[in-house]
Image 1: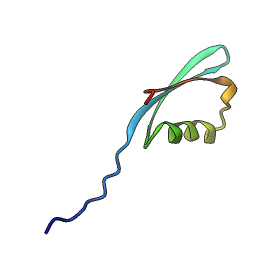
Image 2: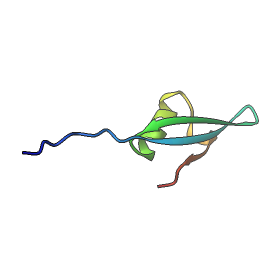
Image 3: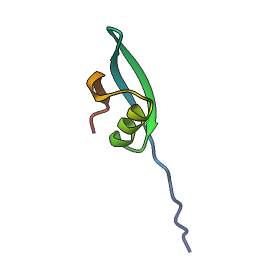
Image 4: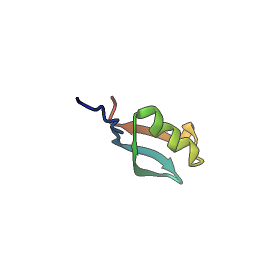
Length: 57
């Protein structure tokens, strides 16, 4: 009898945003792009300064 194992798959997302005239790059582990975006917002950042979240999947 086979047992099902729940696997928590995360990917590394690179978030680029502007801060004081410079581009800042951070990397986060998240389930999907929306979760990575939520991490960015939860850290006190705004969408006005967001440049990109990669990979674009």
